[in-house]
Image (cartoon, rainbow, N blue to C red; front, side, top):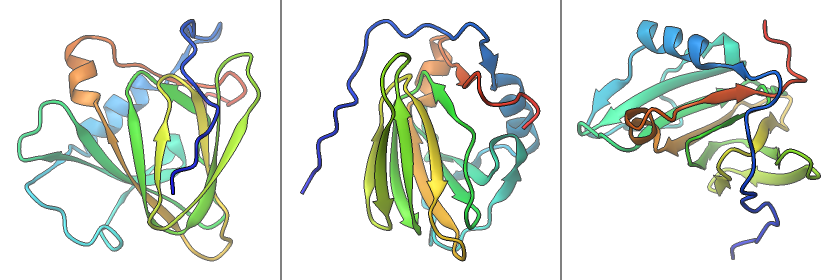
Length: 171
């Protein structure tokens, strides 16, 4: 059964006053670790991932069957791990491949909401909402497949990822 949450699109969500972009770090990481070209990716639970230090995760990006709109990536949080708090101009859905944890989301000026998740769950991240992922296990990794409309948003010149002002830039 689907659980409804009250995080809803709020029309006016500009870049924060600090506008701490992650785009430079992301593009440098993507050049060093280009998307894996494939038609099928087998065994998402065991696929080898690459450290993505600027986000405190491991990850692998994909371009499936020459996709031009959707870009999936597999990310992993270490035991007890926490991602950096961020938001992006891409829509995103996350399928939880392994583990359990929670995600905190909110818009500027709105209260934070926490959504618990576990293996097999599907989670929607609202467009341009601040969010942060937490692995609630101290012994097991948490792994999720994120599917975003990154390729489309990039082509339109609207791709942006912003760190929350409370997150130090050097993390």
